[in-house]
Length: 260
Image (cartoon, rainbow, N blue to C red; front, side):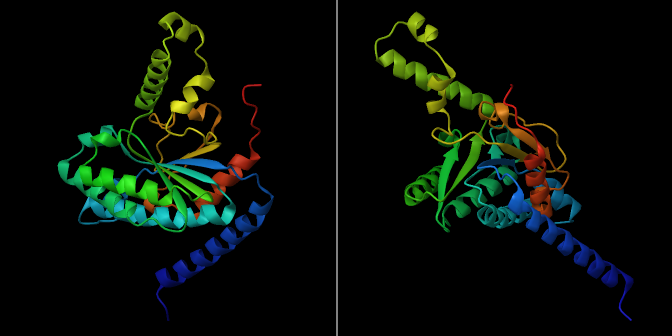
């Protein structure tokens, strides 16, 4: 006779698969966002809860999960996927963890495939030289792909992005010889947008955050003004396809009014 926990797991797997298939069939009628942003949160807590020897292992599990989620995006027709994997505040973590995360990002950057166009967002000049080179190589190697875009926010801060955008605009306008009063009078949202990290891309319609935290922490502050938000209790490495489908279903059910 098989152990109770074995039978219990088989039953749970049966109902999970049935539920996933139902959501997948329903997804054909949903409005799928073109651009999704995700705050990949919970790698460290996942590592601790799973009893892993090193919290870096949690980040590796999170990186593997990302590859799986990118496949789901391709299946469902998502065109742009923006992920936040390392913030400016994350530099304050223990040196061992920072080195491990940045080393992992570098290895993944050198494995560009599946015709995914890679764009980095953040203060890249703060990163180790080898990682900067890996990012430049990935961007150059994938620049002609147009099926799917992956924006990778690393050394990123939302406030800092807006400051950089304003600096870029002011510098360009100043070089044209315009007086500062005229620059200020002519300032509009459309004049700042080209200097954002996501220039020439649609704003995210949906932003997902895992791990149970209910805040954006500055992610895509400018671009998320009309975004829908979905917060999931699951740690990122444990993020399941049904979690993703639930987020898309919730988005599809919402009426977007854009302030009207």
